Image (cartoon, rainbow, N blue to C red; front, side, top):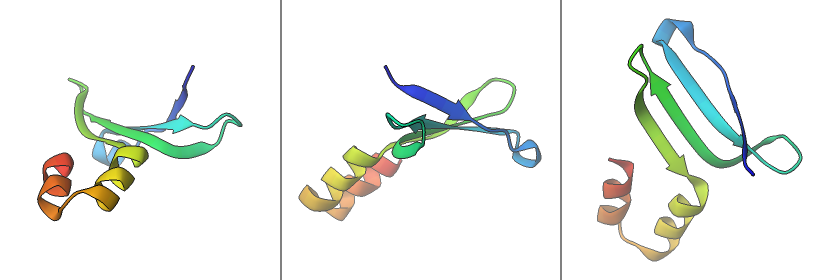
Length: 67
């Protein structure tokens, strides 16, 4: 089961969540940012997906993923 940790940036009303690796460190595998009282997600990324697109797709595919 994945373990997540988070922090809060009061100036931006932002909660970044980070998936921890097996040893409890930020493994960089997944990252999600949630903003505001309505908990609107503003960022979500998977390192594995980004690296796959980098190695196997074009810039247009990477742009679609980022949007």
